[in-house]
Image 1 (spheres, rainbow, N blue to C red):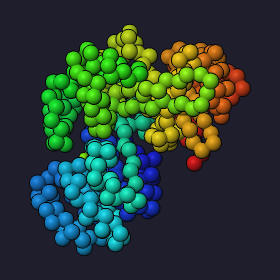
Image 2: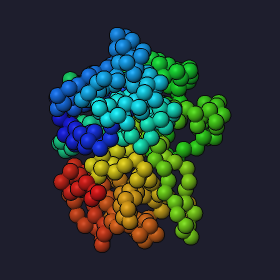
Image 3: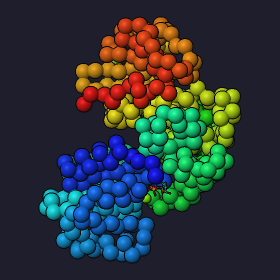
Image 4: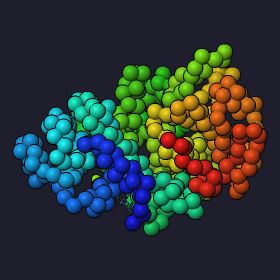
Length: 384
Ligand SMILES: Nc1ncnc2c1ncn2[C@@H]1O[C@H](COP(=O)(O)OP(=O)(O)O)[C@@H](O)[C@H]1O
Ligand SMILES: [Mg+2]
């Protein structure tokens, strides 16, 4: 078992503050396991798993089944019954029990539900293992295999790869249909694979649509669908009133580096090192790890790019501070004109260049080069 101390703490904190907490993330990412660990710290716990027929049947009359419960009530796979939410709203206001909901679809996808619980619910996104959970020595393994526990912990590269391919199949053929999504699995698979080749680039619906013979609106629907089920992630562009024209399309990433590699057919470290998507894969992986390490919320994270070539891979805006990050696959990064523009135009608090070398060193005033394998040592979580 790999301990997920940070997530346990964070969930416990939210449960003190809100009557309903939703832990959301891709299937197989470890939600139920985490919920069991949380439940272990409560005296009275009732667990409903909505993929389990008898539990689902018990909730046919939700106010009857839930009304008298006290302590912690866990409802797993809640996306199967969004109709429960109005009842939860009533129970949340009574404050007799706390509710921990687990699901693999985003609040946007469970639309009516998130609205009915407004002000009473806190959401926590759960991704696969992060570096602080597996340790910095496992950096390369985490990158190649991604953070799904079963993939990361698999016996061999081959077993890990096979597991991920299987996950992709199940997701397309079984999980999406149970969400009521009716798109041919073959078509979505082609779309997802195409996004893997597009990983880390600007979303361009017309260009992507042409190669699949689909309209821009359909492409946008597919993108939203995969983003709302945690299969891909979208990073929004930052722009403000500057003399320079800034890019306004989002960037798209496959949400997990291991899934990216499975979609690209990359099985082994040496295949990754020589793959054309090497740099993009490294960038996407580190963007994800930086966000986890710094404890940034999704709505604090952007990238930035101008039409004349200045760029930042990740910009985190918290309060009055702007933290910039550039990610390089080289091992001796230097200050570039693009970095200087970012520092000055965006008035960055600081700029960190994350690189593949062994050392962390200062590059210029407010600019550091940080070795990826020293990330946990040299980069502290952001002040709240
Ligand atoms: N922290 C962990 N350490 C080791 N294995 C884990 C951990 N979390 C999850 N797993 C394993 O990963 C698989 C998926 O976990 P699960 O909690 O069922 O995911 P989810 O509920 O998100 O679908 C299970 O086989 C589980 O044992
Ligand atoms: Mg589960």
